[in-house]
Length: 71
Image (cartoon, rainbow, N blue to C red; front, side):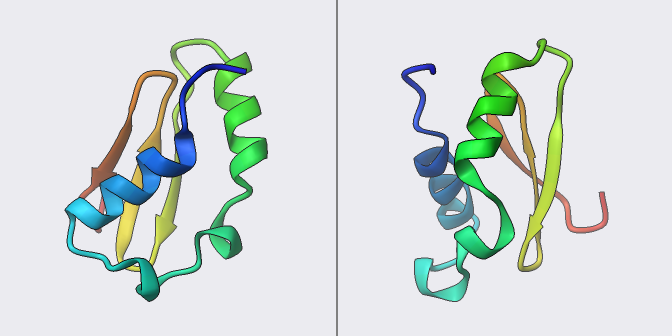
């Protein structure tokens, strides 16, 4: 496992977009441990995309990015 805290990165990215921590339940959207294992073991080309509320997120080995809603 890497030193990266993917859960914290996702929460921070959502909060930077104005979504309060009481407006979603991340554990209902994604299994963080499974996502961490997948991202840690995959190549640099892997992108995992999922939605949390109205926001689309893209997770790679190097970052967490909030995408436009229609992307």
